[in-house]
Length: 196
Image (cartoon, rainbow, N blue to C red; front, side, top):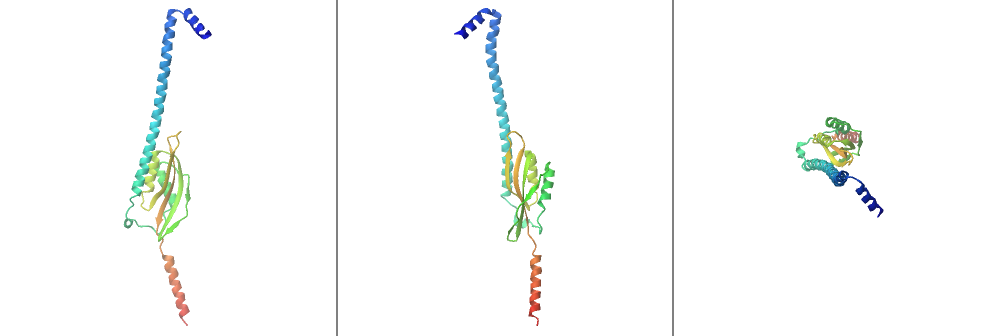
């Protein structure tokens, strides 16, 4: 009751002009707060939509790379070199063309399958734009003997840059010179043993 009495006393004391100002303020303040809240929500939704659009663009790039990777060039069109491509220097060059610098690469154990040898490195990219990542991946796979064999993309919600971890592989077909040379020396030694 004390609050209502104080409000009534205040209302009785003020002039009619001041009463009109109080009424206008009582109407204007909630409307102003409502408009401010609506604009804040709208800005938040716009920022979220821009973030979602970035993610959709990144997913389109990944889908495009997967689609191109799912249709490899015919093996007859690819001539594998005898020595593997030096991936660290190759990737440094691709990163420079894309507009950033690599922090380094980590070599993976080489794998031999039949007469084809696979050499791989893993690397991490940090704070690159979507365009830089796209340009880098296209530059990496410009040669048919190089492929991105693993790719994970992540985005910091507080930043518009991307991060990625990936593995890049190159393929070679080592020559059989050592086998031929050892075979020749073995037959030579066998001939010597057979000679009395």
